[in-house]
Image (tube, rainbow, N blue to C red):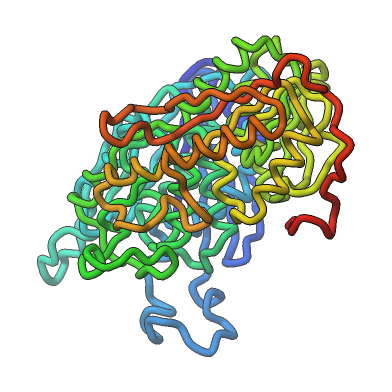
Length: 501
C-alpha cells in the first residue's frame, strides 16, 4: 500500500525536516507484518514528495495461528497488501512518530507552520457509503478528490470495486495531516488487524484531541475506530464531552426497555439517521469558560485542579499569566500521562514549566501538597465518587486543604430528559455513581458551606431549560471572612480511615 505526501511551498524540501527523513536517502523499517520504505521520487525547491510504501506479507500475518476468521482464501488472498487500512495507520505511527507529535528538532519553527500539502492514497476502502470519505475529511478543511476504482473487466463487467483513489489537499501542518490519516484510515476500512481495547481508546483521544470533539461525524468515527465496541465508544464520547447517547448506541429493541448502564450490544451498522441525532453540545467549553471567569473575578493566583483528568482545564489556565502556580491531581496515572502530552510538558519553556505540576493522588486522603492554594477546582468529579465517601472528600478539601475559593461542577440529572436517546433511569456515564437534582446539589452545597465556614452560590452552566435548568450545575464556595485558613484541630482522614480508595 502507498501513501504520498507532497509539499509545494518553497523550499519544498522542508518536508524532509518535518518528517525526519532525508530526501537523498531511501530508508527501510521493519514492521511486525512486513516492512515500510520511505523515499522521495521528487525533491526540488518548488515541489517535494515523500512516499511511504508498506509491504505487507499476507502469509506472515497468519503464520503460526491455528485458524483465521475467513478461511484459507481470506488468509492468503486478500486486500491487506494494497488497500489503506490499520496496517498503514500503524506504519505511520512507527515511521513518522516524531512528526506525529509535532516536533521538528532541526527546525522547530516549522512544526507549527501550515503548508500546502497533498496526500494521495491510490487504493482506499470505501465500502457501502459513497458519502463517507467526504463526510470524514471535508469538515477538517480538505479538498477531496475521489475516483472509484473499477474491477477487472477483461472477462466480465464486474462494475466498480469498493475502493477509491483518494487525494486530499489542504493548507495544514504535517502533524495534523498525519493525525487525521492515523485515525481516519481505519475508520474508512471499518476494520483493524489487531485487538481493540482500552489502549486503542487512549490512542484515539491522544491523536484526535485537537479536532475530534468538534467533528460533526465524531460519533461514527469513534465507533468505527473502536470496532463498534459499545463500552469503549461510550467512554470515548463521554470524555469528548458528548453526554447524550445516539440511536446507534441504543439498539432498537432496547430503546423502550429499562435503562441498563452496564450491558449493551456491539454494533455492526451505522445509518444516516443515527449520525444525524448527534447534536453538538459544547458543554466542556461552557464549563471551562465559566470556571475561568470565576477564577479571574476572585483574583486567585494559585490553583489546584482536583481530578484533573486529561488536563483540558489546565491547558487553558497555563495560557493566563495571572496564574503563577498550577497543579493537577488525579488518581489515574494514565490520565496524567495524557495530560502531560496535552500540556506538552516536556517542550514547555522553562518559565512556563516551573508554573505547572501534575501529581498522582486520590481525593479521599489528606494530602499536604494540596494545602495552601488560593483556589481548588473540582470539575465533573464528585459524581464518580461513591456517596458514602463524600464526607471524607469534604474533610480533605474544605477542612484540610481549605482554599479560599472552591469551584465544584456536576451534572444536573433533571436535564437528562432532553437527551432523546438516553433511556429513563440511565446516567450520562457508566462510571457515574450518582447524578443530583438541582435541589439535591443545593442541599449538599449549603450543608458543606455551613459545616466548614464558607459561603456558597450556585451557577447554571450551559443552555438553560425553563423547566429542568441547565445541563451542568456549579457551586462556588468562598471561605468566610474571619474563618481560619489553617485546618481545624479535628482528626483528618488518613489511609485506613474514612473509606478512602
